[in-house]
Image (tube, rainbow, N blue to C red):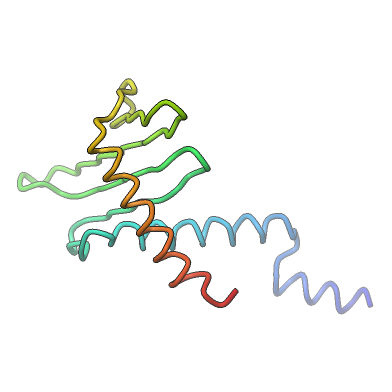
Length: 124
């Protein structure tokens, strides 16, 4: 049995926890790409991601090169709390979002969940 386990581990990976972590990261990246396409096709010169980091945190991440050739990054982090939604952009202080922005986030989250369920987890 030991020779089989050694061969299996060389194919799958020696550390099962490491394999689970890699699978989790790969799934998160795939979900983030799906989220980045929620509002249309991502232009070739951009990277756009939208994803759920944990049960209270949503992230919108975008990277592009501006017309002057400068690399730009915008990361918006939404913290959903019982009394409202807070937002931080590029590490700035958190600010309360408007009711309209909170509704927009809710709609985006609902679309995201439906698309991810359909495109990634529909086999379950």
